[in-house]
Image (cartoon, rainbow, N blue to C red; front, side, top):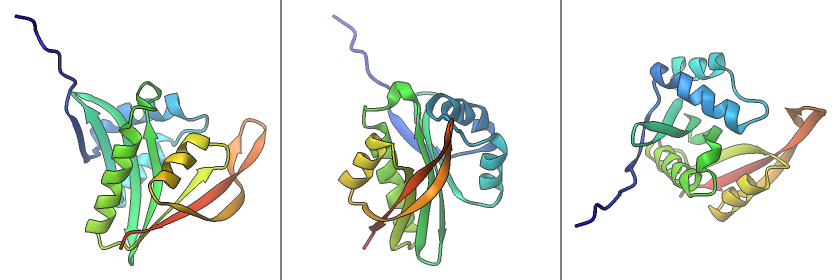
Length: 155
């Protein structure tokens, strides 16, 4: 009889302060300008919706969202490079959208780097539409880059 290897079951749960080291490591591996531990700690402190995606005991992605007065703002969604392109980000995004609905948000907004073609393709395939542009929003190694602003109705 041969053994059958199974992938760990993915799990999304609320982020805690104890997760920050793993979350920061993912930020640094995935982004040229990652969020700092202080920013993430502040997001937890003020009660933003902060989530991690686990596979087994490993955190492979995370998301931060604020929700108020019927609107949700997806502030950060990040998947470790080893897990990108494998549906982890899409499943995390869908879970975040369900959480936004549970908090009575009727619209979700987000910004994404104009050069981030894979993220833009993901958002557009999940029903987000471009509603604007923020000039020189993101830092780069050689200056600034525009953000594309997206929105999605949840009703």
